[in-house]
Amino acid sequence: MRKVAWRKTSFPVNMKLPKKTKRYCPFCKKRTDQKVDVVSTGSKRGTLKRGALGRAKLRGANRGMGNQGKYSRKAIKSWKRKTKTTTRKVIIYKCTECSKSKHTKNSRRVSKLMIE
Image (cartoon, rainbow, N blue to C red; front, top):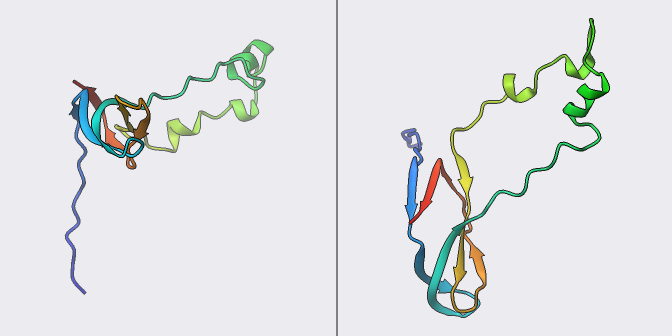
């Protein structure tokens, strides 16, 4: 059995992409000019849900002495899970002729994606 050298994969810190590119459009079935864009993260959910921590505090939970149950411990993220320094970005290509968009099959892990 052959030994394979282990190597660390490094991700680009900053990545630059052009505003427009020429690529194949599966809807027009030809090469067209396409606009480059990044998938935006969805709108954040509001805090006005039934079990919100802010509302629990207003209700009077987590007060006094003794064990406060689920409010005694810190959030798991702070003591158990490690966080990554980069995020996955998905690139969208929008055709200028038919105005239909297609996103890339693979997302890219970059800390900053700049479209110029």
